[in-house]
Amino acid sequence: MRDVLHAISGWYDSGERFALGTVVHTSRSAPRGPGAAMAVSGAGEVVGSVSGGCVEGAVYEAAQLAVQTGEPALEKYGVSDDEAFAVGLTCGGIIHVFVEPVDRTRFPQFGEVVASIERSEPVAVATVVDGHGRIGARRVLWPDHASGSLGDERLDHAVTEDARAMLAQAQTGIRHYGLHGERRHDEVSVFVQSYTPAPRMLVFGAIDFASAVARIGVFLCYHVTVCDARPVFATRRRFPEAHEVVCEWPHRYLARTAVDERTVICVLTHDPKFDVPLLQVALGTRAAYIGVMGSRRTHRDRIDRLREQGVTDDELQRLASPIGLDIGSHTPEETAISIAAEIIQTRTGGTGERLSRTDGPIHRASARPTASLAEADLRE
Image (cartoon, rainbow, N blue to C red; front, side):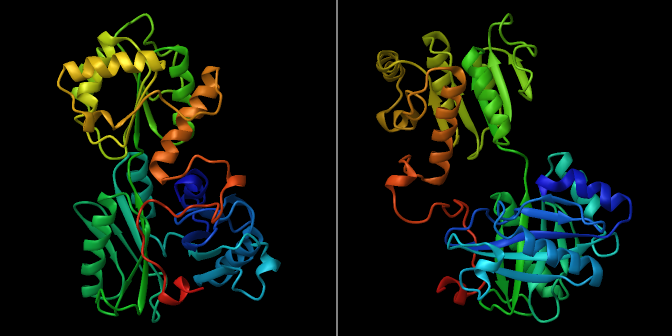
């Protein structure tokens, strides 16, 4: 929903009923993952996408029906359907899309959810997408309070516990329960969508390459900070795309900055007086990625200096140095693409090979664990 938030907020504020189609489960080669959303206004305006074009027409028709009838529905598109080619999903994947009407009566907490997302406060929305007359029931959860009910007190309790755990891990997906919250049953399917603050990209070294990396970091939805100790270089004018520009010694800034398992660190300074103390701090964090720019000679010298400071070989294995994938890049923009590709590959476990030389699904499953809609779907 985040992608379509601005448009649908206006529709909601005007009192208009609209339909929201959300991908809640995929299997095999689905083009977009759980949480991808497409919205259709009462006047037929469309924003967002659930498949990159494959099934948009079919979802549009389902959304129009939801606006007219006020009834939600769980739709399934894919090669297992008799009409797979009619909806255009010929790539071998299966998409489950929950299409629901939204207005002030059906989703009274919508404004609070939007406000939390805009303030970068974590919030999760748990919606029954299948099961025994409760489809469309919703419960909204924050770390310290909740609103709404799924129709049963014990089910609310079980979903609240699970959704908060998923929110803490930035996970989005399906969970199954019995009618009264039993976790080993599957009468009720609940889709939990987590909205967490954007992951951070910390770029050290205010050089031309940093400007390109900052731009692509913003494009990839990171909260980007550029840091350099030199005030003549660390300026907002040089890095207008970055969310923050900090003039401070890099290792001191990093030592006082929160770093979690989603944070990526790009060290572009290739100057020992900055690199060595900075990397000592970085290797003590939980960062998902630590990439360091420099030639192979610079890399060898850097490794020797870090060893002299007591950094172990196991810790040094965490460094992506020289930074980026080998795509033959030269310009700052090409190098930024190389770095971004390595960050994505690190997160997803991709091979880095050309797709034309690989077998199997093109679209990899999300690195975040999710439960399936039903056992039958896993066997399709």
